[in-house]
Length: 139
Image (cartoon, rainbow, N blue to C red; front, side, top):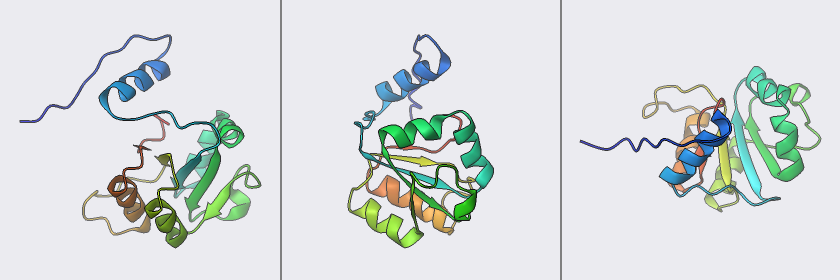
């Protein structure tokens, strides 16, 4: 049997409580300002949800944001502040340890057998020890 590592924390709201529990169960560190963050997204509405809550604007003000996506550039909010990269570039950047955080807003498709480029990016991030959030609601 394996432990699932549940941790309970108290905080001013559920977001701070989640962050405290996440930090206590992993080697996760909040990336320092102006470091590189990768967002992977396959649907414009997921990116728009992040933007609607002003999270995307906050990210672009505090970090160098890279976006790996198949979304048309004119559908990307704040596209003048985001570095859009293709899958090959993303993979090279992950291998060169460029990113301090990876946020995946892609659909989870059968984890081990999925051969999509988004799945490959997720696997590379894990392989090269990039701290990650694989759920848009948690990001």
